[in-house]
Length: 78
Length: 149
Image (cartoon, rainbow over all chains, first blue to last red; front, side, top):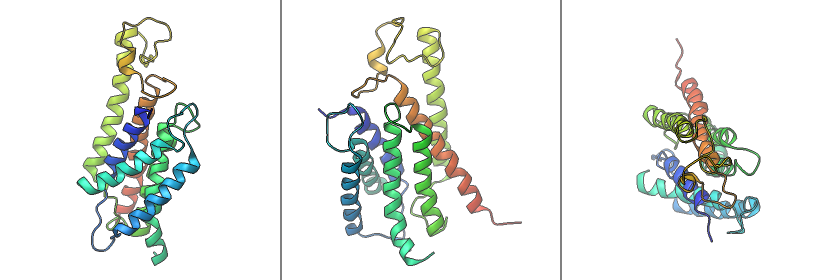
């Protein structure tokens, strides 16, 4: 079972920071760049592993939730 | 800055910020915590601000945004401390765990939902992280906005 705490708060903090990403024409990254970052984030989360005593996922759920939150904030409010 | 840095900085700063958030969330169970995680997040922002310049950085930290986060961090921390006084008589008493069994049945409300049930400690880490993130970012924003006499 997924632990709610790190997943929710990771998403929340990531979302807050993601809303502040405002790319203009001088600094703009395409969708492909975000896909590459997503793959790198999954690899990082896998290498970090879960916190001690966390048995829900084999990767860092807070890290991944933070990344998803940043992307969601960038899409919704960025 | 060089083109290589401009291509690299923004993706790297996103990953740095994720690492900072992960550090904050594991503060009650692993090395690190609110201050360290907040400093890592601020490092991600500062990395972008220095490489792209403050005017062109993709992370737009406005004064209002920083003031809001700082206020949430401070007020939230004090609120949790005062709740400890109200329910137990001790400032910052861990009302999510209630080790001394002196509270009415409110522990479940303030208990952080994870594997180790650390009570309010993760919430304090999160609030401290917000404060440190804003504090360190504000210093750099002040320096970058300085135009000289």
